[in-house]
Image: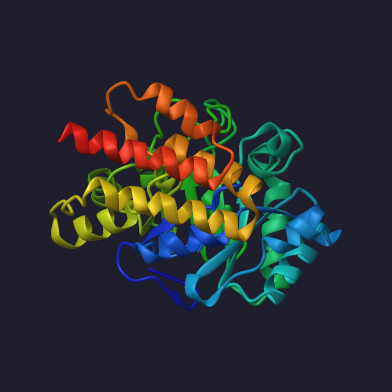
Amino acid sequence: MKIGTVDLGERPVLLAPMEDVTDVSFRLMCRRFGADMVYTEFVSSEALIRHAGRTRAKLAVSAGERPVAVQIYGRDVAAMVEAARICEAGQPDLIDINFGCPVRKVAGRGAGAGMLRDIPQMLRITREVVKAVRLPVTVKTRLGWDADSTVIVELAEGLQDCGIAALTIHGRTRAQMYAGEADWTLIGEVKNNPRMHVPIIGNGDIASAETCRERFERYGVDGVMIGRGSIGQPWIFSEIRHFLRTGRALPAQPFAWYLDILRQQVRQSVERLDERRGILHVRRHLAATPLFKGIPDFRPVRVAMLRAETVGQLFGIFDLIEGMMNDER
């Protein structure tokens, strides 16, 4: 699959852009485990053009994570165009427009998935951003605003006509948020539309290598994007790459190996921020990881882990968990 001049190879698996998740250290880790391309946290166009320091910091990319995309969102054409030009100056590999974020503070203000209620404005923004920059421009969106307005098949053609280089579709409406199961049937319909020629990337509910391969084979998508399925388990990319290549599950590593990956995430988060903020940031990964599922009587330990305030406290709990697993064996 190629996006402009960016060649991602056959059946690429991408890390989705996620606020407060896909910081540079997590992106680098996912690339290390085999993610074919990574995306920054989404960036507000309005904040970016106001030169907000924290927003500008999200644009920083490193050589080791390439290919990397910067994702922007907003509802004003001029602001989105200016933001895209600012992003281009930071030299990412492509620019992605977020028309899919469902959270109230974004969609409720008419940006992100809120643009699904104003398709003409969505197309104006897309057309002008494509014209404003030399980098490939892609779009990520949803099936529609709600079950009564699943417009994605027609919308995909309109976005393609604006000049986008690829389209990512999350298989839910905005009204669904992240509830229920992602519906890939309309993603497949877009991919199989003879008028579509840009790459179609499917997104939603990919949490295993087996599911990823099934989505490729059943719906014919050019790429698959993984979001929540990577939180707390960046090694999912190596599992998927191995399964796609061989048709066999990647042999499991010892429990201590996975726990060490989480330790590395903690260290990197603390180094990037500071001890207090770094631990707060990484808690989302610790809460979501499947590594601790099935451990007997784990709830008190989990509570203590998510309340730890220092690296020493947290790693002491990790040592306790490792000892619990050794006792189980």
